[in-house]
Length: 203
Image 1 (tube, rainbow, N blue to C red):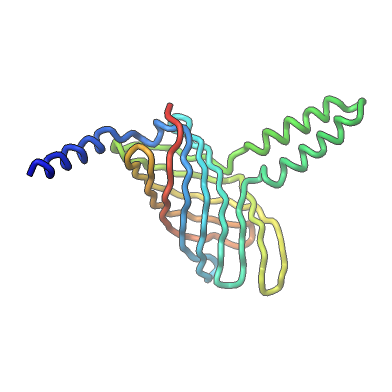
Image 2 (spheres, rainbow, N blue to C red):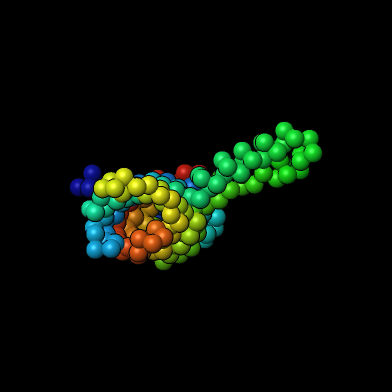
């Protein structure tokens, strides 16, 4: 009886000491989702990072999508492709004494582009351990390969959705989400999934 009472008190203490997601600085998670696009089913495997600024989150997404119709897609932010190019141009220009300012602009621009997020989320906390966040990721690129034709391409990509997250023991997160996503001419896909993550840093 005493052991059961201690267990109940401990469980209650965990519940009342859990914090909100936005009490932390970073949220890292691994996600899995399923859906359909262009009459084909897909599975999506994701690693996501989020910088939490009050109610706003800066989203960074790295996704690998496997479609049943032989298409594979790797998703990243635009900065992954654009930043090295702009940084390299800045370095080349800085070597020329007549274009020092444009070289510095290229280097600084490359750094800024590298940290540019994929999109934004807006966090609402209806209950102390729960978080609801609609999100829009509009600065993404998909590196696409059609295994049937071996054709490769780079396409603009975006996604919009909503996720709910439960914070457990002030560290671990469990998420569920529904979203629509598109890679340029490939049409809109619709899917849903789950995620497991951790929060880091306290404000």
